[in-house]
Image 1 (cartoon, helix red, strand yellow):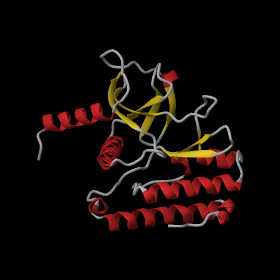
Image 2 (image 1 turned 135 degrees about the vertical axis):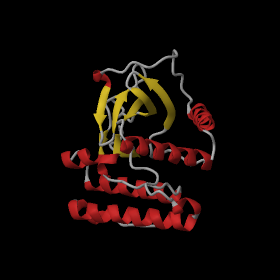
Image 3 (image 1 turned 90 degrees about the horizontal axis):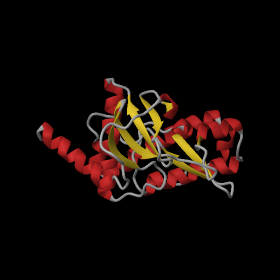
Length: 223
C-alpha cells in the first residue's frame, strides 16, 4: 500500500493533469454565503469567485460527504485514463484550498443567457419544454452512458442539469451520482459486468420515471 505522502503526490499530479485553468494567487480562496449556488445532501456548491464557468463543491465534514468525494475523484481518474468524452457530465478540474476547507472544482452549466441551467426535474415540473424534448434527453443520456460505459449509482432528474439552447433543445449534463458506491467494484474489472450494471441501473431509473411521468410512454430503451 502506498504511503500517505505518495497518495498526496498522486492526487496532486491528477489535479495538475486535469486542471487546465489558472487558479490565481496562492493561499485559501475566500468563499462567502453570497457565492452559494445550492446545497445537496452531502455537499455545498459555490460559484468560483471571478470565474463564471466554474463552481466549487465543498463536502460536508462527515464520513458520508468525504466518501462521496473520494468515489467521484476515483471515477474521474478512471475516465481520464480511458480517454472518455465528458460531453454530458460536468468536467472536474482538481482541488483547491478555500476558506471553508478543501474544495473541488467543476464546470458550471449555464444557459446561453448566462443563467444557471435548471435541473431536469424542475424543467419537467414547470412544463418548460415538450414531451418530445424530454424523451430526447433520455435518448441522449442513454446513448452517452452506454456508448462510453459511464458508470453511475444514483441517476435521477435532480442530478441532471439541462442547458436550454437557443434553438429550444435541451442539452443534459449529469452533475452527481457518478461512479460506483459498493466497496468492491467488480464492474470495474469486466466490460461485461460493467455493461450489465449500467443496464440494470438505467432500467431501474426508467421504471421509476415511468411511474411518475406520462410522457415516458414516448421513450423506448434501445441498447
